[in-house]
Length: 585
Image (tube, rainbow, N blue to C red; front, side, top):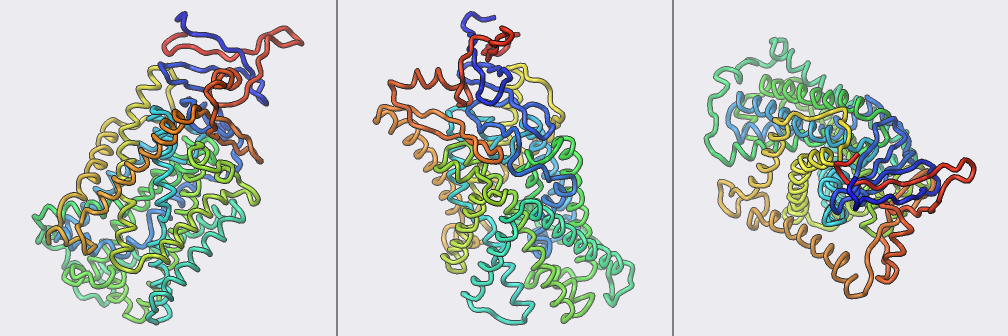
């Protein structure tokens, strides 16, 4: 053993087992185990502590994983996106092939998530955890940057709320004013929040129910499409669109790349269940079966629904894109009046389900940001009182989304606000995917045991390439020039603003962690708080320079207060926490 390695005896309060800290340069790795029957988690000690008993329970099972992902993937896009994708690509054959490409890209990205989850099987929060552990230095930088942008840009479902409101008024056959539309959107989002905050078990059950309704809806469209292809409806020539299926394929780079971006976002949500890993018993075995199943189910239905649209609706009508594809399909098969009533109801249910599943996953992500201690009031974010649900994150999502619904006017301001959050998300996704390679190297260096799942290297490569594509593509000008985007000003303004937000996060981190402490003569240290129902969180505290040595002596690497013991008084044995250097026995 390296003579610089030292033994530091301690017993963590409330935990009589000894703990080993593996030192690797300036990194300290600890082995912690949760209560979800998962393998131990080896993580850098600056990360949020593992909750040995999940305060949110263990109620996420195989079907819940499937429907959490399905409910997030299937929003309103499957009813409208096919028209715009076909218009961008120009041919039926290439459009159908792109939906398969989207499945392959998403499957590779999901494999990356699954391997990362296998390293930290008792940590919820998904991307929050994986960035935290892939980039532990500078200490608290990535957690701070990700948490700040997650809090500032936490209005992820405002667009779905507006869509829901629009179709509620279509069901009533009434044209709303702008404030009527916003009022219904606020009511819909508030109702979704109320359903979720009072009972965690019910919220997951409701997500399952909505997911089943969505699957049945897609099944109905798919079967109807096959009936149309069989010539059993009033559609005159259902196979017309499939003759010379690649005729009209565009050769424009913008259309091809824009369609791929839309396809990629149509599958977004395949990762939602990874935000709830610590609520899943035997999580990796469950996720490795149910997460790919959810993606396969959605991919099959996406392709079948597109076949149904092309069978029932003439290509020129689809390409015009003045109505959503599903509306044209229902009109062609059932007639306009029946189509309007049935389709509007299905879209309202689908949009509301998207709100619910998105909220469930995002609440865990924000809770994990709070448990890292890098945003104020960690007790507020980590607490599950009084209903056993993450009330603090739900409140933040509600407040930010209601603000985004009410404040910006329709048009440029709203579209720009929604677009701004996409670029920082793409940056962090790229960092997370490349961070998998860093975590692999870390684990090999410290001698951590193999995990239950490892992604193929080709899947990681595809994930990296798709992330690079999503970072580069938004800078490519649209065919109409610099001002031909979905806003009236420069098309890439939102990219610049997104990068500015990340730079602002970095400046905030430097001021908070380094500059101000140096000026005020203190250092930042992490402390562990144990709340009700087993909720555990880090709290970053200010320690005066003259007391730093004493603080470090009294706290372990994770931040728990330790009691030094020379031995067990009853049997004379020793309780010790062992610190070793990476690569040593």
